[in-house]
Every structure is written in C-alpha cells, then in structure tokens.
Length: 277
Image 1 (cartoon, helix red, strand yellow):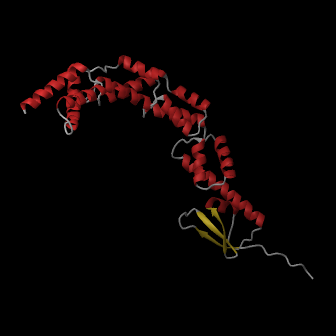
Image 2 (image 1 turned 90 degrees about the vertical axis):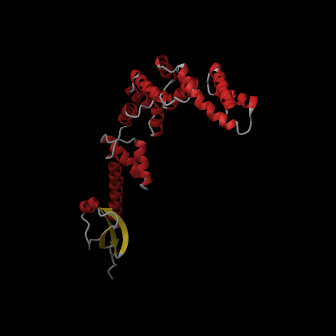
Image 3 (image 1 turned 45 degrees about the horizontal axis):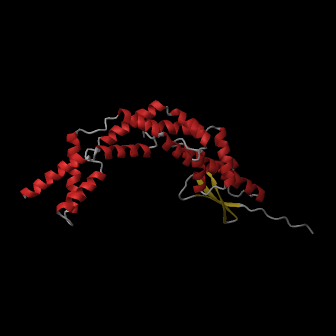
C-alpha cells in the first residue's frame, strides 16, 4: 500500500491591505497566514494556487521582516539626519524584532546612512548657527541622542570659542533689553542665568559681561524702581501702613537689587504723594 504524502498548503488569496496599498495579506488554504510587502511579493513571485513548504514560508516571512525594518528606517532618515539611537527607537516603536534592528543598523552604517560623528557635527553647527545654543546644552542634547563622550567632544570642535562668544553676546544684549523694569543688579543676574541655561560656560559669560553695558543710568534705574516700588506698595498697603509699610517696601526693593539712595528717594516721593491725597 502506498504511503500518503502530506499535501502542502496552497495560496488561496492574496489581498491588498486596507490601510497600506503597498502591503498584502497572504492566505493559505483559506486562512490568513502572513503579511508581505509589494516589493517582496514581486521578488518571491508568489501567486494564487502556489504551494509553500514551511521552510519556504519562514524564509519569505524573514525576508519581508528585514525589508520592512529597512524601509521604515530609510523613510525616517529621508526627513533628515538621525542618530543611531533615534533610528533604533523608531524601529522599536514600530515593533520590529531586535534581530532585524541589528542587521538594519549594520546595513545603514555600511551605506553611511547613519554615522553618529557626521550627525553630531551637523547638529552642533545647526544648534550654534540657528538656535545659538551654548556648548554645554549641545553636549547634553547629543548625549540624549545616544552619542558617546568622544564623539560629542569631536562634534563640539565645530563650535569655536569666538563663535560661542559672539552668540553669547547677542543673547545677552537681547535679554538685557528686556530688563527695563528691573534693577541693574537684578538684570545682570537674570542675564547670567539665561546664558547658563543656554549652555554657555562661565569663562564665556565673564567675557560677555566684560564688554556688556549692563549698568543703567540713574534715570533708568529710578524708572525701573518706581515700577517695582508701586507694585509692592500696592500689595503691602492692603495689610499695613505707616512706617511698617515703608520698611516692607524698602526690604523688598533691596532684595530686587536697587541702591539704597534711590529707594529712599522713592519712599520720600510716596510719602509726599500720600500727604497730598
């Protein structure tokens, strides 16, 4: 009696996916089996009525997974340079298996589609020229994007000291122009803090202030004092008056960095104003 051979599963339908017209669903013996991209479908030559061994099916699915990982990565890179960590995360977000991520990243490195050194240098130039970030902020950004310390150090060579100083001076002057309602002392402190937050080192900040006109004229200082003084006067006058009110206002204005002689002048002005009322 002849031994009955096992019948191989047959492709009974190849159906285009509703959301992705470049991907298809393969059905074997009337049941969904696996998805496949259009490119892999054409390459493998699958057709309705074709039979597949289990090994052949596994080979096709693996080839499709590798193709999918690569096309997702290339599409992501088409919008701009990316660090290797960013590409890896993109593939993870698309639920690509780690083995396909590794082979895809290796392929992209060989093709020079991803190169953290080139990425770091490009990011540094853009951050310096357009965003005027300081070197420390850029280093933090690159660290977050997965670059190692050596690569970051080489990347920052694209940002020379003279450009750092020029950018910091621009930011300082811009920030100082917004401090018309604060004391010279408070304005300087806020500008220094702003430059620190932008990632500039202490030595650059000190050079900026060596050439920055940060001292206000007495007239401008008094103008700012009056604005701040009126605010605190209104606030404290709701709960106190007389000498206690004067002392609270003085203390607040001292904390804001205004000089004592101008504070006394302001208090005398307010007292005269109150007497007139």
